[in-house]
Image 1 (cartoon, helix red, strand yellow):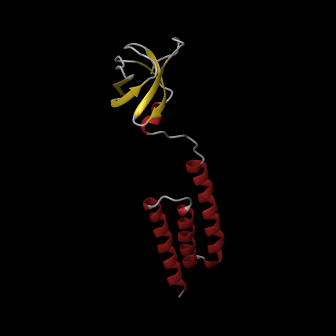
Image 2: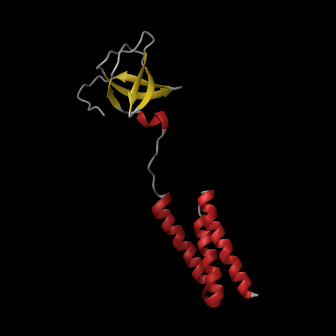
Image 3: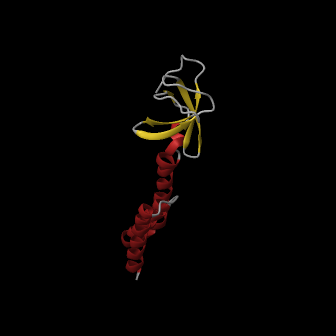
Length: 145
Protein backbone atom coordinates (compact mmCIF):
# COMPACT_ATOMS: atom_id res chain seq x y z
CA UNK A 1 0.00 0.00 0.00
CA UNK A 2 2.88 2.39 0.80
CA UNK A 3 4.21 1.87 -2.71
CA UNK A 4 0.99 3.11 -4.25
CA UNK A 5 1.07 6.29 -2.21
CA UNK A 6 4.70 6.87 -3.19
CA UNK A 7 3.95 6.42 -6.89
CA UNK A 8 0.85 8.58 -6.62
CA UNK A 9 2.86 11.37 -4.98
CA UNK A 10 5.55 11.13 -7.68
CA UNK A 11 2.95 11.41 -10.44
CA UNK A 12 1.17 14.27 -8.64
CA UNK A 13 4.46 16.13 -8.18
CA UNK A 14 5.42 15.69 -11.84
CA UNK A 15 1.94 16.83 -12.89
CA UNK A 16 2.26 19.99 -10.78
CA UNK A 17 5.69 20.71 -12.30
CA UNK A 18 4.16 20.24 -15.77
CA UNK A 19 1.28 22.50 -14.76
CA UNK A 20 3.82 25.30 -14.19
CA UNK A 21 4.66 25.29 -17.90
CA UNK A 22 0.99 25.61 -18.83
CA UNK A 23 -0.20 27.96 -16.06
CA UNK A 24 2.78 29.88 -14.70
CA UNK A 25 2.21 30.47 -11.03
CA UNK A 26 4.09 31.46 -7.98
CA UNK A 27 5.59 28.38 -6.46
CA UNK A 28 4.19 25.40 -8.38
CA UNK A 29 7.69 24.02 -9.00
CA UNK A 30 8.50 24.01 -5.27
CA UNK A 31 5.35 22.05 -4.45
CA UNK A 32 5.89 19.68 -7.38
CA UNK A 33 9.52 18.99 -6.49
CA UNK A 34 8.66 18.50 -2.80
CA UNK A 35 5.88 16.02 -3.65
CA UNK A 36 8.06 14.14 -6.13
CA UNK A 37 10.93 13.80 -3.64
CA UNK A 38 8.49 12.83 -0.88
CA UNK A 39 7.07 10.08 -3.12
CA UNK A 40 10.53 8.78 -4.10
CA UNK A 41 11.74 8.81 -0.51
CA UNK A 42 8.60 6.96 0.65
CA UNK A 43 9.65 4.15 -1.68
CA UNK A 44 13.31 3.97 -0.63
CA UNK A 45 13.79 5.65 2.77
CA UNK A 46 10.45 6.42 4.44
CA UNK A 47 12.05 7.86 7.58
CA UNK A 48 13.80 10.58 5.53
CA UNK A 49 10.83 11.35 3.26
CA UNK A 50 9.30 14.30 5.09
CA UNK A 51 12.53 16.12 6.07
CA UNK A 52 14.02 15.80 2.57
CA UNK A 53 10.77 16.86 0.89
CA UNK A 54 10.55 19.96 3.08
CA UNK A 55 14.21 20.74 2.49
CA UNK A 56 13.79 20.33 -1.29
CA UNK A 57 10.73 22.61 -1.27
CA UNK A 58 12.53 25.30 0.73
CA UNK A 59 15.65 25.11 -1.47
CA UNK A 60 13.47 25.38 -4.58
CA UNK A 61 11.70 28.46 -3.19
CA UNK A 62 15.05 30.07 -2.37
CA UNK A 63 16.42 29.33 -5.85
CA UNK A 64 13.25 30.65 -7.49
CA UNK A 65 13.39 33.77 -5.34
CA UNK A 66 17.01 34.47 -6.28
CA UNK A 67 16.81 33.65 -9.99
CA UNK A 68 13.27 34.46 -11.06
CA UNK A 69 11.19 36.55 -8.70
CA UNK A 70 13.85 38.99 -7.52
CA UNK A 71 14.46 40.28 -11.04
CA UNK A 72 12.98 43.78 -10.91
CA UNK A 73 13.58 44.72 -14.54
CA UNK A 74 10.65 46.70 -15.81
CA UNK A 75 9.86 45.19 -19.17
CA UNK A 76 8.07 47.62 -21.46
CA UNK A 77 6.29 46.69 -24.64
CA UNK A 78 4.35 48.66 -27.20
CA UNK A 79 4.65 52.42 -27.38
CA UNK A 80 5.78 52.74 -23.75
CA UNK A 81 9.18 51.33 -24.68
CA UNK A 82 9.94 54.52 -26.64
CA UNK A 83 9.17 57.02 -23.89
CA UNK A 84 12.29 59.00 -23.07
CA UNK A 85 14.00 58.27 -26.37
CA UNK A 86 15.50 61.21 -28.25
CA UNK A 87 15.38 61.09 -32.07
CA UNK A 88 16.04 63.30 -35.03
CA UNK A 89 12.74 64.02 -36.73
CA UNK A 90 12.86 62.45 -40.20
CA UNK A 91 9.88 64.40 -41.63
CA UNK A 92 7.99 67.65 -41.17
CA UNK A 93 4.82 67.51 -39.09
CA UNK A 94 1.59 68.27 -40.95
CA UNK A 95 -0.75 71.18 -40.16
CA UNK A 96 -2.33 69.14 -37.34
CA UNK A 97 1.07 68.56 -35.74
CA UNK A 98 1.18 64.88 -36.71
CA UNK A 99 3.35 62.62 -38.84
CA UNK A 100 4.11 58.98 -39.53
CA UNK A 101 7.67 57.89 -38.77
CA UNK A 102 9.63 54.66 -38.47
CA UNK A 103 11.36 53.77 -35.20
CA UNK A 104 13.20 50.45 -34.92
CA UNK A 105 11.56 49.22 -38.15
CA UNK A 106 8.07 49.97 -36.76
CA UNK A 107 5.76 52.67 -38.10
CA UNK A 108 4.38 55.05 -35.48
CA UNK A 109 2.16 58.10 -35.55
CA UNK A 110 3.66 61.03 -33.69
CA UNK A 111 2.16 64.31 -32.65
CA UNK A 112 3.30 67.52 -31.07
CA UNK A 113 1.66 70.66 -29.75
CA UNK A 114 4.45 72.80 -31.24
CA UNK A 115 5.46 73.10 -34.89
CA UNK A 116 8.37 70.81 -35.73
CA UNK A 117 10.39 70.39 -38.89
CA UNK A 118 12.54 67.66 -40.39
CA UNK A 119 15.90 67.49 -38.60
CA UNK A 120 14.62 68.78 -35.24
CA UNK A 121 15.81 66.89 -32.18
CA UNK A 122 12.73 65.60 -30.34
CA UNK A 123 12.07 63.54 -27.25
CA UNK A 124 9.20 61.07 -26.95
CA UNK A 125 7.41 62.13 -23.77
CA UNK A 126 4.18 60.14 -23.76
CA UNK A 127 1.47 58.22 -25.53
CA UNK A 128 -2.01 59.43 -26.49
CA UNK A 129 -4.11 56.73 -28.07
CA UNK A 130 -2.03 55.34 -30.91
CA UNK A 131 0.25 58.38 -31.16
CA UNK A 132 3.62 58.99 -29.60
CA UNK A 133 3.75 62.51 -28.14
CA UNK A 134 6.99 64.36 -28.88
CA UNK A 135 8.51 67.61 -27.68
CA UNK A 136 11.40 69.55 -29.12
CA UNK A 137 14.61 69.10 -27.14
CA UNK A 138 15.73 72.46 -25.82
CA UNK A 139 19.30 71.37 -24.97
CA UNK A 140 20.92 70.28 -28.24
CA UNK A 141 23.77 68.51 -26.41
CA UNK A 142 21.50 65.50 -25.73
CA UNK A 143 22.58 62.41 -27.66
CA UNK A 144 20.27 60.72 -30.12
CA UNK A 145 19.33 57.10 -30.24
